[in-house]
Image (cartoon, rainbow, N blue to C red):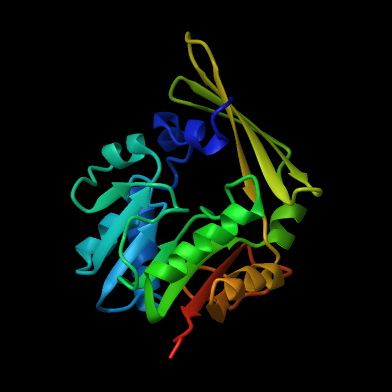
Length: 245
């Protein structure tokens, strides 16, 4: 059986493909989150799907008690995250109930699985590890704008490497599919794809509610700018775990 796309995609080539998503940008975005009040000033934070730690490291540098989780051992190793990040599946988070004051899920790292039962499982796990009253900060693509502005083909040449990317939206599955051709000069090309489920705001709210998370705010970016469904590229949702008492 073929391995899931997200196992193949998040290897060493990923860091080159998305090198514009740099540690410097991560530091800037964490400062935006802190400045906008989207991250707590104290308490424990879990950066879910932390990758190589471009947000996790700045969180810790800012004095936050932050831990990370990612499925890709290659990304965890490349980020030097040993000791404060674990390799695990987001559907089975290996932390205790009510351990965290905040969970972050940044750069559209929700919606990877092939069925919505798995997405519900991720949110149920997030709710489990959050303290009552704790918050989830979920950064996802804004479906309306993403579909409208999807670039079918792009080709980029850089440092002995050609990147050819094709993109399409599958309306039946509500997924953006990206085919990647990674072509180093003089070496065989490598191919993989990405496939991310899009969620309209109301649909995402319903998924969160089912997990016991109530949406308190939705922003257009990590700086807490105003969200406009017709123009915002992103939707940054802040949801709070309901207090069962």
